[in-house]
Length: 184
Image (tube, rainbow, N blue to C red; front, side, top):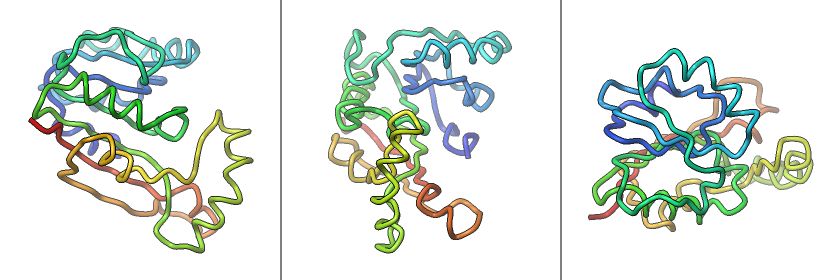
């Protein structure tokens, strides 16, 4: 899934929620540099080996994807994977990415979130308080495509499905992969 979501990234990439650097091996050759936004010092430390194995310049530029001290239109693409669930204000983070990505640039996202069936949504709502307590503030009920659109991005490609597994895992495994464009 990470390989697929990274396909098509170009130029200078803003990666919000860099974590342990799990996407590094999937950056396509058209990526020239990465600005890594990672709030966790432990996550950044865990990425050290992956960063050391690539010649691609990767610079940690901020802890909070909601407010970044970077110039407008300074990136060609943005990448967010499994981070919007724990971002305190995902709409603000998506708008900030929109400020930093040049007009016509792309946002690639891979996230889990709100399921389409009401029966699964009921379980997501029931489980979310526990999930947030044990999983670093992770929300199960965020509607990723709605947030991306509300932040001003234009969704160009949208794929949504459950990951394989038993039906009882459905509250956690409804996934969204999308590419959105920043309007010119």
